Length: 498
Image (cartoon, rainbow, N blue to C red):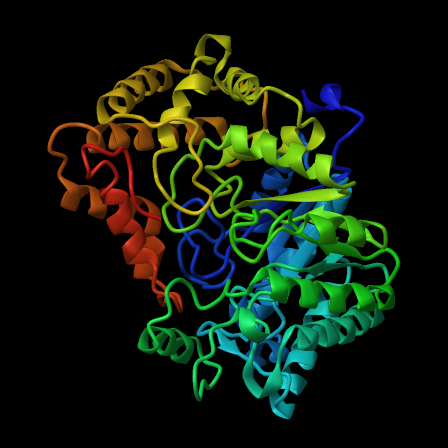
C-alpha cells in the first residue's frame, strides 16, 4: 500500500478536491445544493469517501464553497444553507478523526446560482462580499485551510478593479477569516493570467452590469476569440506578480500560495506566460502549492479518465522547478474517478514511479492480479478531447474497439469481494459503472452507432439530475450529452470535442 512507498522528495500536503458546483453535477458527484433531488450525500457517504481519500494517500479533503451558497439568503442560515453547513461541519469532524485536514476554496465575488460578479468598487457589493465571507468563516470555523480564490467564475474589471483589487480584498478576507477561525491556514490562489477575472484578464465588455449573462453576451457581440478570461500576457503577469510579491509579507507567515508552473488553464506557459520565476521567488517567502486543475480530469464530459503519464510527469516537473509543499488533484466524479485519483495520490508521494505500473497495481488491488491487464487496456478510454487531454497515443476506432471488448471480458469475470481498497460507494458498483462505460464506448467505436439513443442513455445515466433542478448558469449539460454521443464520430480521428 501507499505507506510503504514514501520517498524523500514528495509533497507533504496532498489535497483531494471535489468540485460539486451546480454546473458540474452528475450521477457520480455529490448534490449538496438542491434538496429533494437526486444524488444527495448524507454524512455517512462522506465518511466512506474520506476513508478512500486517505487510503489513496491524500492528506486533505478539499471542496468548493460554491456560488449557489454565496448569496444574501445564506445569511438567514435556513433551508439548504443550514443543511450544507451542518453536513460540512460533520464532514470536517469526521475528517479530523481520520487524520485528514479539510479545506474549502471560495471565489469571493461570485454571487448566487446565476453568477453575479460583485464589484468591490460598489459599496453595497463590497458589504455583501464581506458579510457573506464572515458568515461562512464563522459557520465553518473548524476548517483547517481556507482558500481565497480569484475566480473562474468570478473577478471584476468594473470601476477600475484590477489585480491589486483582488490582493487588497484577499488581505481583508484574511483578517475576517482569522477573526472567526484563528487556526486557519490561508491559501492564496493565483489562478488565471493572473488573477482570474481581475482587471484585463477579463474581456472588456462595455456597460457590463456584472451578470454572467451580460458578460458572455457582450463577449459574443465583440467577437472575442476564446474565453471571457485567460486574456493576460506575460507582461501583465510580470506586473501582477511583482505587485503581489511586494504585498506577500503582509499575509500570515504560515500562509500558502497556490501557483502553477505556467499561467494557462493547463498550468503551462501557452497562455499568460511562464510562472517558474515567480514560483521560485514566492517559495523564498511562503510555502507554495500547485493547483493544476485539469491534470486528472477535465469538465463537461464524464467518463473514466486515464491520464497517468501526465499526472506523474507534472509532479516531477513541479518538484524539479521549486520546493513545492503541496499539490491538489481535482475530480467532479468522486464515485467514478478512482484510477486517476489513486494515481494522483501515489504521484504526490513518489512522482518517480512508473505510471503503467501504478495503473496495473490499482486494478490488481481492486479486481485481483488476474485482471492487472486492465491497467494497460484502460488507456483506450482517454480518447475524449477536452480540458487536460494530452494522450500518449492515438487510437484508431478498431484498436479502441478491440480494447473495449477486452475490458468488458475482464469486468464481466471480475470478482470484487477481495478488493484491497475502500472504494466508494463500493468496489462492485465501480465494476458495474466501468462496465457500462466500456459497453457504450464499444458501441460508439463500432459500425453505425445509434448516437441519438446513446445521447439519451448518457443523459439518463449521468445527467438526469438536471431534470429535477435548475440548469446551471452556463447551461452546459446538454452539450455534455451531445459531445459524449459524438465520440468517434469522425472515423479518421479517434475523438474530438472538449
